[in-house]
Image (cartoon, rainbow, N blue to C red):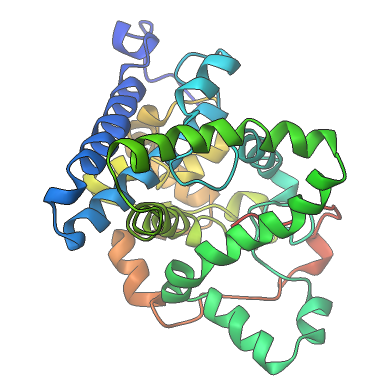
Length: 317
């Protein structure tokens, strides 16, 4: 892939100024929406709170990939406050790096971000459980049901290990205590927002928007290159997901920063869509909503079990 900058990267690019701009937008927007919580109606707080919490999750994704500084501890410090209260950043970093192994993509047993099931798992389920699994694979079910399911999955898996003194899990969860405490000090102690209100108006919708992004990011396909999508979204959603709607571009080379994905896609669109088997949503997230709001997208059973890579990783969301 030829460089976007044949004469060398400009200063703004070398300084990662777009990512620093997202940093300011996240904490400025979240800080103002919490500070003015009592002056705003709930129906305005909810989309604002959800947007900025989700945007913080998108910033975490950039930090996982070494941006904006390339210094692991500093990038982690930038996203240290746990605005969504639940998943430690180091936990997310560990699982997301595993997710980027191409042979793992969509594997129910190896990819931490897969939500497919092995055919034998599906065969053993009763009708009630099958109905619930199908509901999770509609967009409405994804937005409403997946946030509590995701929290439960992680806590149910990690809590026994923490109490057994598992050093890896303790390494994830001990730093999460001050990360959550810092947020609750501001939310409850300074802004006088009830805990339940923060969960319902900020954390829950923020996680819902996050799983909206990941709803169509991947599909099972025999060819690895055809497993990752492109969503041709507008500016508002591109900013919210920090460019991750161009997910196929990101997976081709995770070292490329998010602000290069759109120009790369614009330049190489036909080639990228040829490589990913035309897995594109030209109508953006509205098209996804029209197609899958109450319609099962695919699965839940993985259609190519012979392609599944064995592993021990559980899906986060």
